[in-house]
Length: 296
Image (cartoon, rainbow, N blue to C red; front, side, top):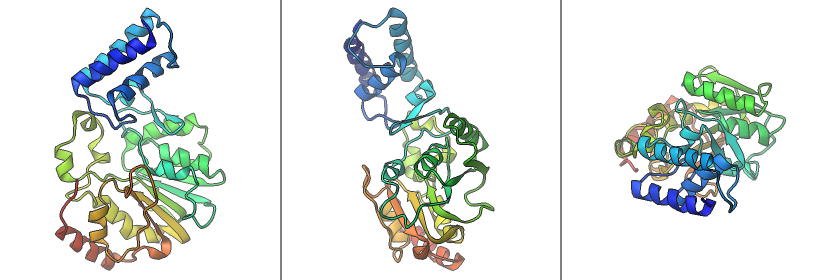
C-alpha cells in the first residue's frame, strides 16, 4: 500500500466517525497525516511495509473507538517545531502564547527577563519554550496538579533544562516570589461549554479546563495577585480563549493589550504598572463579572 492511499483511507475513516479535532490538528486529513508520519517518520510517497500499515490502522481504530486525542495515543504533542511528551495526566499542549515567543514577546517586553513564572504549567511545554527563548532566565513552572507536574518533569528532562526550570506545586502564586515575566495559560472553559464538550476534550483533566460560569474564575485570581509578584517594569501574559468580551466587561478600566495571534483576542498583556492592586479592586471586578453574560 502506498502512503497516499493509506492517508486517504485513514482520513475517510476519521470523517465517517465524526471525530473532533483541536489537539494539534484541525481536520480528518491533518489528523491522518500526523498519525501516519508519527509511525513512519516521514510522509513521502512510497510503499508501506505491512507491519507499519497494521500499526497505523490499529492506532486509527483506537482513535475512533476511544475518542482519545491522538496526542494521548502517541504520547506526543507539538508546539511549533518542538515535541513534548504528554499523557492523560495533563492537558494536551496547545497555546497561542507559543506563537508570541517566536518574536521574544517584542515589543511588549521591556527588558530581557531573568526570572520567569509559568502559571498553570500542565505538561511544562511553555516553561520549556520560555527557557529556550530566554537563555539567561530561570523559570518557575507552577501547577496545582501533582500528576501534571510529573509529565512536566519528563519534558524538562527531555530538553536538559533541570538546572534552569524549577517545578513547583502551587495553587497559582502560592508563596512564590517576584518575576520579570509571568506567563499564564489557566483554565478558561465556561460552565456552559463544559457541558457541551466533545468526547475528545472530556478525556483531558477537568481541572485544566473548567473555569466557572464565564470562564474567568482563575483569571480573576491572577489579576488580583499578579501585581504583588511582578517586578517594576514586569509583564503579565495571559491566555483566555474566547472570553475577551467577558473580561473587558469585568475590568472596563484596565488597558489590555491584545497581541496578534492566529486566534485574535485570545491572549492579553498587562504591564506591572497597569495591573490592579488590592482586594478592593478585585472585589469590584468580581461584582461586575457576575452581572455580565457568559460567553462560550
